[in-house]
Image (cartoon, rainbow, N blue to C red; front, side):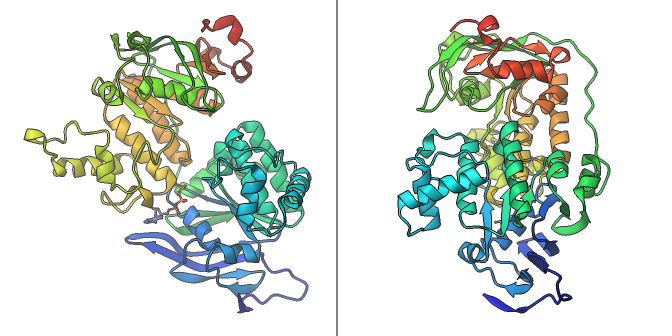
Amino acid sequence: MSSGVAVSLPRGVLPPRLSLFGISKRYGAMLANDAVALNVAPGEIHALLGENGAGKSTLMKIVYGVIAPDAGEIAWEGETVQVADPNAARALGIGMVFQHFSLFETLTVAENIALGLGSRQGLAALTAEIRRTAAQYGLAVEPGRHVHHLSVGERQRVEILRCLLQRPKLLIMDEPTSVLMPQEADGLFVMLRRLAAEGCSVLYISHKLEEIRALCTAATVLRAGRVVARCDPRVETAESLAEMMMGGALARTHRPPAHAAGAPCLVVNRLTLPAGEPFGTTLRGIALELRAGEILGIAGVAGNGQKELLAALAGERRSAPGAVLLEGRPVGALGPAARRARGLAFIPEERLGRGAVAEYSLAENALLTRVDGVTAPRGLLDMRAVNALAARLIARFGVRCSGIAAQGRSLSGGNMQKFIVGREIDAGPRVLLAAHPTWGVDIGAALAIRQDLMDLAAAGAGVLVVSEDLDELLEIADRIAVLSGGRLSPPMPVAEATVERIGLLMGGAERMVHAPAA
Ligand SMILES: Nc1ncnc2c1ncn2[C@@H]1O[C@H](COP(=O)(O)OP(=O)(O)OP(=O)(O)O)[C@@H](O)[C@H]1O
């Protein structure tokens, strides 16, 4: 795989673990990587920073051999290499943990790892090795458990273990903490620091800038596919890092002037709903009242009924008609389309699959929830109006893409999220349900989305935001309630909400006292 020495160094100086020279990759009109140069030293935790669509994932997929660059060279420990595919990357010592896991639900942890490694050793020997490596890096994983029993954090540990068993010299992690609870993220950092201390290099992508400052010892910043800065994030601030990414000053959100909340626009009455799937959560006696003009934040750790509550509110799960009232009218037995027709909009958690269709163009994706206003007489679609709507969404919400004909799958994760959130806000709903509205979105776009949600509420809509990001809820919500074990606490005004109080409720401490009985 090696073909000659690319970097000449004085005797005794170790070459970088990985060097990239002039890496370029074009997708149609979009230059995703533009002559990128990058060096990662042995044992370095190196951050790759950039706004949504800056080209981070593209670059990492090139290093891991998933896609081929149009131009440029890769050097591994000083020698030029061709990384033809992920097998070639793994043979060099490169491991990658993707945002989306590829585990078989019905197999055990050990069986999944055996499949991923293509290992010839017997399952018993592999199980022993998994236990040893898990203990060495503090990764609590039980090899005999079936994957469908595991939380998202545990599944990520399985993926990491699978990489570690190959003794990588470079580990690539693409937004690993976006699916983790804070204490799980702390555990991940301990593991990564240990790995780095042993000489393994880490390439780390995240939009969480405080996390980058705490963990990474070097950073390369991309903007529109080009390297625009290199720095030591430990001596930067989150703000200065954001400004490097954006090439300008970071805006701030401003709360619209205080206004009295209006009449209840979404009311839930003692909603009890059995879990819809084997590992789901039963909702128990949920009562809530969202008023026009306010943002109600639902805090809590995923897996405590968030998915089920949103499904019941959006109409994907039906209940007794009077269990859910939309502007005073019973809608519990109605489906999503009928609720949308009454002014409800919904930003789901999974952007591809439920929020948008990967194979559709952006124009078609705009149409998914926005048929109103783009139908011509006799029910035909007015394609000019559809295209104009998609173009407006792209411009208004700063979606980086090649145009309205771009397929959903061609957008970076954060840009797809901006498009979906924008499509729902732009509909001018009277009630908006938003699940993790800024998930995977860069800091500038996250500010813009939070501002849009606050403006929508100030204009008279009721907005319900489900988020694990407490700082986000404290910034935008008027009241916050906590979902824990399928029960919802009574809401508290944001002025009375402290991290400690919310943390207690997340643990379920007060639920027996306050929540209505099931
Ligand atoms: N398969 C593809 N076809 C067309 N365009 C693509 C494809 N993959 C990526 N792009 C484009 O290349 C650009 C860079 O995308 P990439 O996913 O690398 O960004 P990113 O920095 O990882 O973004 P995010 O932070 O949102 O994940 C984007 O504008 C994207 O639309």
